[in-house]
Image (cartoon, rainbow, N blue to C red; front, side):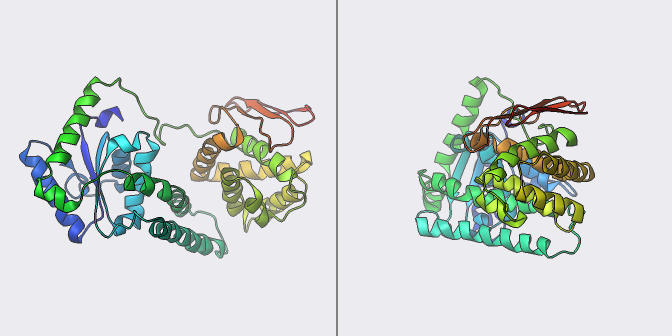
Length: 353
């Protein structure tokens, strides 16, 4: 984040009153000597939209013009979730809430949750009915983003509604002076704060396929074993939320691949069988080697599952879990050269190289 300590970004949905107030903010700040970084002016021809949105997510000062269109826009929601994931959300945002943004009533906020639920379901169904689900890079990432938006929108809109953001007319009548003062204070504070480097997704190292497949299998097996015999497509419904996302990502990747689907079904029927675990991990390794984007997604999902499962050291070649919902204690230790030691619930050790 430290690269953007003195950069002021603005996040908004294009068009209409939204564009009008952004132009007014831009002009008012320029007259006071502050330059706002905005996509239409600063992205540049052929510039990466995603990289620009990720920069906004790291920004120390982000003016967020919230509208109904904003909360239903995948690009705007990507920016908002990126800001939140880089911590200190409430300190780093400077919201202006437009009248059509329905965030002040719980029923209205649920409409946005429902919207992203439906968007996720539509895309998921499109993927599901494809005869061949390979080579869907970018599409699966978009599905994962819809999942993020659905999971975060209630919390983020609740935070926004609790902030005294003033009305757009109040800001205009004061020529945005309160906004200017708040931005200046934030930038001055940034000069005296110790610089902390945030870890971006690009800097987060993807685990190698062998370690990643073993970590995912070792995490999933104890949970699935507690269910008894279950159909592959039903497993995710019974798992804790973040563990369920790991299973969903893998089972979606395995669909229409007979050997992989068979391995997932066998694990669902008897997760305590070490042969089933080995077969599942083998098919998962193959899938991870074929698709770097899938490997990055699975690494991220394992990272997100930390708090829910008690796993630790995700991403450096070692995973340990000791959770009340798991069967016994399972530890996986290894290194990126492919040497892995697994201790199962009976404390038996299998070595794989």
